[in-house]
Length: 315
Length: 69
Image 1 (cartoon, helix red, strand yellow):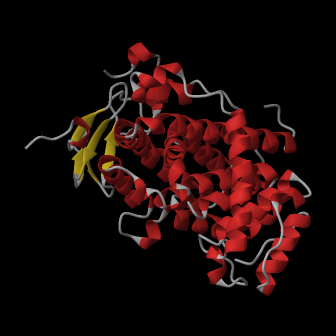
Image 2: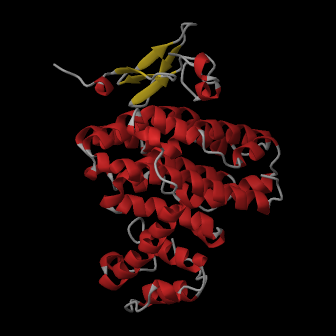
């Protein structure tokens, strides 16, 4: 993947510095807009995933870049915490029931319902482009957390990740299935669509990366994962049926059909076998678990509203 | 040997599916054998799944009293 196109002064300085190997002397306050800051943080995070073909790998750990990354993450975390109403009271009792109830009670507009019955092919393809930013590194943010979990939660996350990563078959990696889906509709699986996604999609990806990279936020990473899995099976079926209605190629339908069954397993494993032992071993992680879950649901709702508005669909 | 409840190979999820760990195949009510290629599978208990014998989270759309115990 190449560096994306800048969207303001901060991302422009960063792109230039990354490309030329010059040190970065800048700070979050130089951002022209929230979108500009979000793109800058997204680029800094990407250095810890697959990186950019036009950037020296050694820059991932360069102090000037780490400082900027830290400052941008602090801003993001403050924003996420300001939106978060706190863990529900019931969470201190039966965590499993409280978590499932919390996720179920969260209302949000449904892109999947629109795709199911009404979306045009153009809209369906646009959805794939927007989602590619995350799905091409599906499960990767959680894998950074693995070594930081207490024993029981770690065993369960490893089990879940083994499935996400194809259960021993490289061609079954979920990110690979998504790459196949993109190719089947003539799209490029090289991550170029980051240039067209709005700030909400960048922020969504930045939050899940930050949760994954910071040990302190391991509870939020797992709460995010669990909420994501809990809200996946039913929409995945609607999407698969919508893509079938539009007669999109089989790999697109297969990707979503796979998630109907896989995520019905993952949601149980995530809530019962990851969150519960994590919070039992470390009760201080309860609040971060719900911060992560809330952030997942809230950012999905924000992104859905932007997409549906763009398509002129009443949410 | 003591096994924590959640570490068992078969786990009943209240209101939801049955988790099976480390199985190679499942025979359904019609005698059809379904090969398992995941470390864990979720067997539907509400019988309303569109992907039987596997859970597809349909139980969540049921009122609580109609979900499997």
